[in-house]
Amino acid sequence: MQAICDAVSETVALPGGDTVAYTGVYHAPTGAATNVPICGIEPEGAYADVAAASGEFGRAEFDYGTVTAEQARTLGYLEYTSATAEQLLTGDETVAMRQELPCASEACEDGIHGYMYRFGFATVTGDVVVIAQFDYITTSTSGEREPAYRSQAIEAFTAAMGAVIAQLP
Image (cartoon, rainbow, N blue to C red):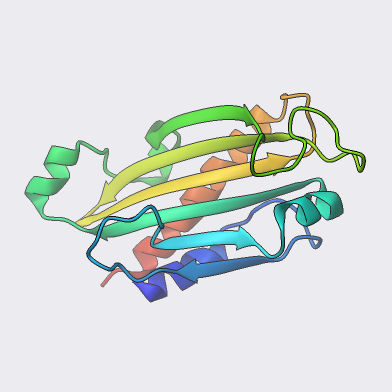
């Protein structure tokens, strides 16, 4: 499970170019229900500092694990293929950053405010279920970045699934 997180963290491209550094963090399953993803990719530093330096950045969360054939059928997730990645998009939303980024609805003195675009995916490949979420955060308040970020999320999910599949026995 750690190897999958490492591979995904090295593979997934998130916005920010050379300005934003990202760190992948593996959280070993504890057996208890938590809101912590098994694998998370986050920008290094406080969100407000990252936004001031770059104007856009992202984060990603992955939950994955093995299931029986019966569990896979019960979940009802589509089987993954790179050609069907867009069909696996379970939801997308655009929200003003109200709590995670200071001054989301109005500009602060330093002008930082913005939107978050969230894209979720769920699939099964063999006996492995993968649930992924990609967040793209921008200081642009126009709300018009959704199509570009949606395409980036699909590309990032496809790359992540390639890394997951490569790590499977």
